[in-house]
Length: 305
Image (cartoon, rainbow, N blue to C red; front, side):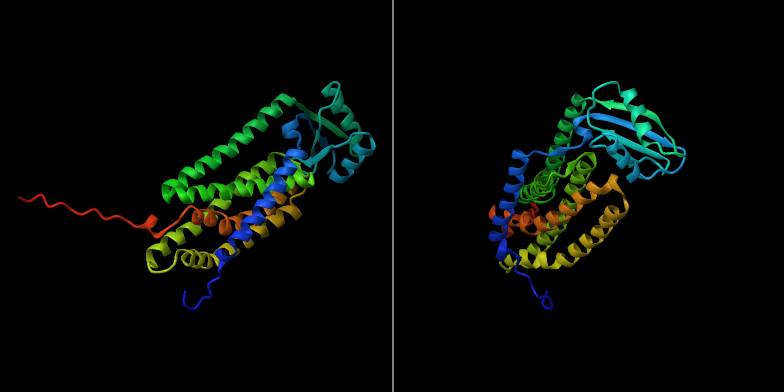
């Protein structure tokens, strides 16, 4: 590290902790006061599979449904340009008749539409799915804490879980604050971000443990700064690569992947920041010291008489 300028990350840890707390509180406030704009996966509704004689334009179908009085319809391609899926909030009346109406509105001269399948999801199923989703996030966080506690120390485990909670609350809070739709694709992004953020945190923890054992005469905070500086290039390259992929999904993936990509972009920023300033800072606040990484060598007892 003699040829590399050490970045004093921990010098700003208190200020960054205040910023993090404010952002999380804003997100929590939005969740409590406004709530999430839950998608049809959670609220229930009707899903209609349409098949066209010719390739159909998604935007034209959406406009035709809106002109026919069908509001809040989500139109997505389903396996090809000739098949579309229309998802609607809970509607009164018979679902089969609704499917026929949607097919009539979506049809154009020379390109008729046919409703192949109509499925209805009740609000009770949506509520159960929502509860199971929360349970999945809680189980993921718990398993991560157990893993870090076994591999490192409990101090690191607590810091890692607080960091992951920060990422989840930051991402979900932004969706609540700006009223963006929250469906199963966004939930999948949140779970993926938990794994991604933990990966970054584990890399930092590995380097801190290694440097604690190598730099025995160096101050604790300086060792953390050295470790973060050494892993910074790897972190930036990893984030840049993932951001390129997510931007491709956002720009080319269509509406089906739009909110998944948005959630990933928000979470990538939060995860990179939290692995530097939250996970390690909390471990330091719990009294992280060199003694936590000293390997005890058992003395061999001489059994000879």
